[in-house]
Image (cartoon, rainbow, N blue to C red; front, side):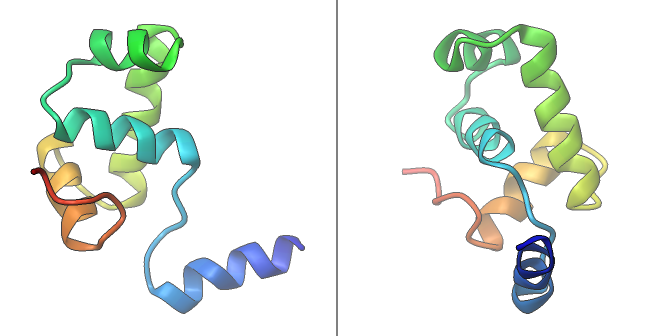
Length: 81
């Protein structure tokens, strides 16, 4: 099972993000702050910040804005409507 998960990220050519990392990126793309994201997901603000930082590192981005743009262009999250 673990090998299958590792292969999924290799097959797509992009790092595997957790559900929470993706949710935090999505809400950030909608203009929400870390505090807003934390309230929406019922988590601590520091936890939301941690998920965004983790996603930023996995996607090799310097800023959260760059990370959101890369997540959209990689079809990890939907485009802003």
